[in-house]
Image (cartoon, rainbow, N blue to C red; front, side, top):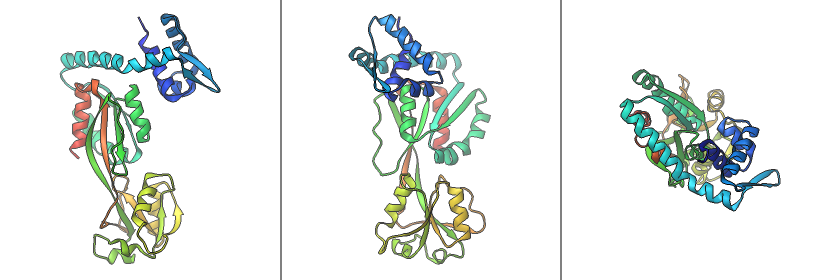
Length: 297
């Protein structure tokens, strides 16, 4: 019979392109992953990987094998979850969550203490990952739940192996010092009121910089960006000590203190946050309980 762990290793190598990356994802050494795949080749009597530059590629036999793995792992997980559901009847075990940083701050952290108090037999393990990586982790079986977002209004393409459930809509607000002229403007803040302001914003390539470009796209003049800072607490420190304006997602926003105020925009940028899990884990009491708690926020 095919070694299931070796099959999972092959699927990770196929997705990530190298033995080293697959080993890092699976928590093994590259040598261990290599040995698993060699054992798989001996079991099958065919070669499943071939060298390609510094990486590896699937042989036709390897591709056929990887293409069949979703059905294999779905069936195994359904067996496991069915047994647990019957035997336990209540949330139990470990739930591995992959989530982007602001979902950890704004969604997971606020519910985690109460969740673990209500379900003491559940251990929640959280790993920070960008949405694409988190989605892959769920599909590959190295995470049980992913929290992903859609920053541009278009739903992310999902593998057929997963389900998705909308949890939260996150909006971006303007944050200024309470003595700033914008703090005296009636909310929601119209776009025209943002002309002739100085800004601190997230660096290019981040979702929040995309939001910033969206907000300032209709200004009369190019925005005066004074500071590019990725950390939101540091952005707020600059806002508190200068006349700068920041655009901060509500999920990412630490306490503002007495000196800062958040202002609604007339046309705020937004993103929808979804929980994603494997279809084969639908019956997991622990996953259902965690998603229900996140949904209650």
